[in-house]
Image (cartoon, rainbow over all chains, first blue to last red):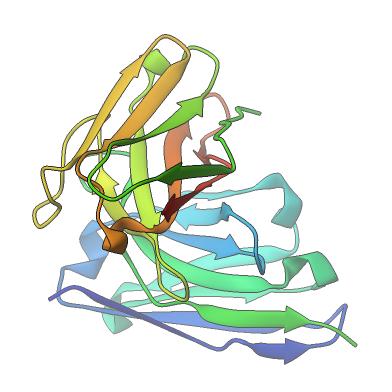
Length: 119
Length: 108
């Protein structure tokens, strides 16, 4: 069974940093592109970043470029999101999602971890 | 950047048909995917590649895509279908995934 379990969320002050993790199991992690998707309270879904199987390609939504860094450790079956210079508008539930190997969609999602940026 | 527009809400009586639209410039040339999200839960893929269903998704869920509008159709609506629904595409011009604005389906 495919499982994605996020951790690392919490309350952080504006300008602060946080590192999210996503532990993957039930599939060959190193064979899939992976993404982070976020959802602000009461709002819609927003794709944040993704990373190729070997980590050689990474893409980001413009609003987080230069502040967030996506990475992965295939030996640990883990995905990460390093978030720096956090802003109030980064407050959201952050989901880890697996990208389908045969199409441009997300076939599995984690349950999410809440990041709150507030003083 | 590519924009996907959905109606904020759709209301439907049990047993009737709900249609949720997703508008985008020449969206018919893209593959459209749909997710269902219930309160406090992660999104679930219900339709991919315009009209295909993942295993475990009822046949009541179907999709179509042409011109500037994609549509998710839920036939014989049940109370358990009450949720938010999002369309999604890959925008090759920006190498970004794009989600629609979301539609809340209310079962009367």
